[in-house]
Amino acid sequence: MPIAMITFPVSGVETYWWLPGLVALAISFFTSTGGLSGAFLLLPFQVSILGFNSPAVSPTNLIFNVFAIPGGLYRYIKEKRMVWPIAAVTTVGTLPGLLIGAFVRVYLFSDPRIFKLFVGIVLGYVGLRLSHGIMAKQKTISGMQEGKNQEVIVKRADWKMIVYDFQEREYRISSISLFLLALIVGVIGGAYGIGGGAIISPFLVAIFGLPVYTVAGAALMGTLVTSAAGILVYQFFMPLLTPDHIAVAPDWLLGLSMGIGGLLGIYLGARLQKFLPEKLIKVILIISVGIVSIRYISSFFIR
Image 1: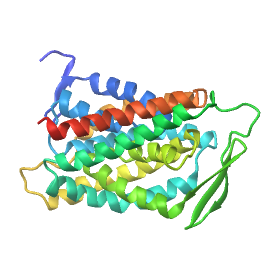
Image 2: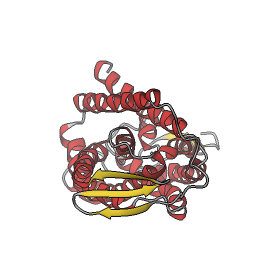
Image 3: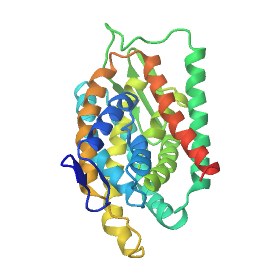
């Protein structure tokens, strides 16, 4: 075996030692500007390129999230663009859904073609909503506007409504609607190891009309907390309930390898985000959800 190659002991994946980290860095750098960790793109990379096909690929993806996301969160918290109430409701809603998703992945959808078809259609709809918003909007923001307050100011946060000011505009979202969205996303994230940010962030921007500059941090925070919980479920709980021949525990070395690259990528993406035009960030979101949507829908027809 060439010296540059490595075999990850748990998954049996054999590849160049630097490849997982480099791919994770490149993906997370772009996706983190829209509040996405990039795990949703790393999953097909592991399955299709690295040949990691067991259910254990899902919690391995969650390990990437846990190690990669803190770099981006540091930037959003430091710049006071974290909408803590949205992050809290998202986390509370996603956690029970994540546990359900773990059971769905192992027991009901070992061949999850129908479920993926549904997710692909939903994401396709979100992508169309984002595209319509870009085409219909006459004036877009070229980065965060100088001279205006660049910090999030929360005005109300209760079980009915979350209201906050950003860049001299008021934004609001129903706490109940956000909770229900997070619950559904938790099932999907728990089943496929994507954490949920890949779905929540585009929804908050396209459906609820929140500014992407404030959504990213909250989406990443929810993804971090729920990913940590998902790892515990797959590592300690699911092995007790699954047959010995089904691998469900994560490959920690592979997850850490991707997480190190993702840590740098998400930090750089979060640092760059405030300088990017709003339209460009939304285009990144559209491309991201479009890739997942096409992949999930096509998997229903192509085996």
